[in-house]
Image 1: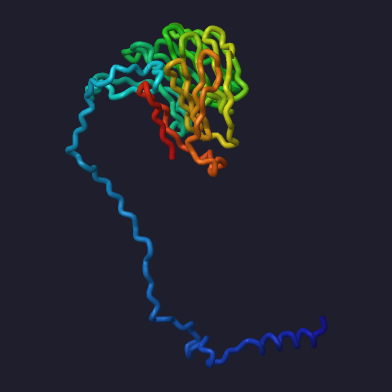
Image 2: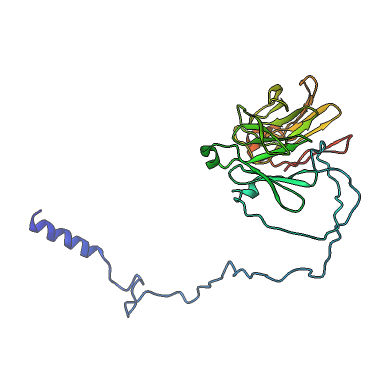
Length: 300
């Protein structure tokens, strides 16, 4: 670029800049003008934490003798009001591996007479007696499976502990010794309640299929398929057994009734509008509960 051209460009730049005071941009002291009439209002106030306890004198009476229903293998999910005097008589501690995302699932303690059974983060099953002493501790997962941190659901009868998990495994354990009786693999993971009925048990997998298995060897006896959804909510599905039928809900909100002896679908009813079918991943549901004549159910 020639020297004359550079001088010409510099001249144009300087001549285009206005330094006059008519525009009001500059004052006599070469300072920016301040609008003194500007009003500033704070839109969001500081949050004040209230750390005092409400209603410190309130006492809740939890004692009730209205229910004799058992927690163990309750066919209708209707526990009712529990006989509990409200007094914590004894307590003990046991250090176990914490279950990840505990609040996103619905882990349940199951009871074998006066014993209780629960599980740890890597699939270890624990049985405690009524004085909190560990009776047995068993884990039947491979090292690679333990890293996946399986989530377990249980059902029990006098001899068997049935276990289903979110890795598509299901197996039976001798409830007295904790020894493995048999173990099988399903085509899809499980996330539902498990109900034992005589010598069979029922469970629903993530493909919305109700499956009936033999307790003795884990053989599938029949299954009932319902409509599936692409996204699976974390809510555990629910089952009840009543009058020779098994009732269950699925991830799109349908409730179905199946004849136990034949495995045939008797009826099915939706609980949400078909226009929000694709939003089934937002569906939140309660457990199915029965009083022996009716089924109670709610969703969001």
